[in-house]
Image 1 (tube, rainbow, N blue to C red):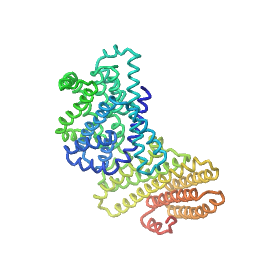
Image 2: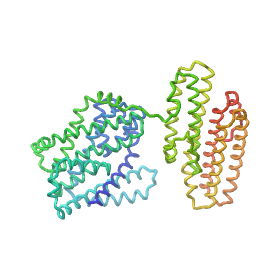
Image 3: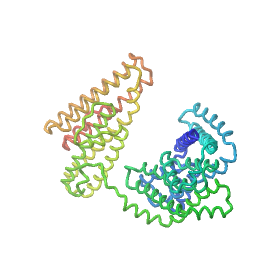
Image 4: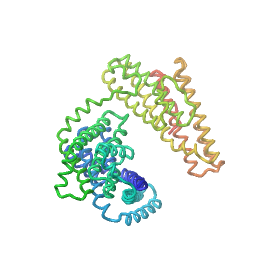
Length: 542
């Protein structure tokens, strides 16, 4: 039984991995088009979830679209309502096929053939993703067969009589906990169906487990939206509150609903279980649809962006010119320092903590630091746009333009270093001492560059221009020498063409980052005339 659960979840993981690639743009465009109307949004959510066999993928698509402002909140909620209904198709497939045939007889050939193609085909091909999809499908079927067989054996070995007498609230809690842990209501449904098939539990406890699973499956969306924009949290909590409300009503009416389904002539316990799930999701969607606008308005009021990544500008209204300019300058310096720490961290250099670098940022992994910088860059840019609309003093406006140029170039530098992450990792983990020594040399170079950039950032303004020009000329000279040396060293160190190309690209990205940081410094520490003169210096990255 445990093997069945593990294989089933593994299959679901493969399915989601493949469908994220195969779904791609067409499904996103379809969802976006359907979501223009709330009723069509519900239908669109049903169709896409039924085809993709994963409400998680659809819900995460919706979250991304809402975060990108391509879908309104109430329309996103409509798609999620439809997604809840669409996911019941999986349960019908399991109930109608999984317990009437020997699934193992066709699951094993699917696994075998798909597994061979998955190994044989290149990962960039569409055939590879289809082989991953069918491998996942085979694993889901095999896992279901194991669960079914396991529960039959378990029912024969154990006495479930005492468990059957537990209150329904206990089974609701069990369904919630299981689904929260494994993050698959589909798997919880399969387990419940297997337990009913093996006569380990009755229909009512199984129904309560399914109700708990409906709440547990919302946790994934809450986790995905945590720390995100307010609109993402609005969607996630809207989905959570909707499910809690529907499940609370369904739990209170569990006996009348199950009796109604029985009176409809559905005597097979597994069909009754799936019918119950479909009934509550479909009824909930129909009843809740007219109130989406009201729910959206309540969520917008309840979940607003109250936190900011900025340290200075959020405290100053954009229309206060001098104070706003001073706050923007401090924010720009802070952004520069955060980026220097990101560069140091990327190369595993010794990092320097200070009051300008939040402790939470300092502890983040490199990839999360980059996401933090992007979000902070967006906040600074949005504030600047608002400030620029109301600036009257031309001199202040010119200085503000120069500062936002510094912020922009700092972000370019972060992107250059981020883009070389795979090269950094490859050189850092290389078994060739020659390649690792080149990485180690780059680390020392990065440490020296960041140290000098930090000195210039906090240096005296009277020598700022001369010091920055001298720094720039030294870096330009080092780049030319390094490119020439790479070709010579490549032959001497017996590196192949791919390795030489990697080193050249690695060097270019690194020095592109250096150049962007120096361009950011010139807009930050020089006046307008000096910055213009500095911009005319010969470039070294073409």
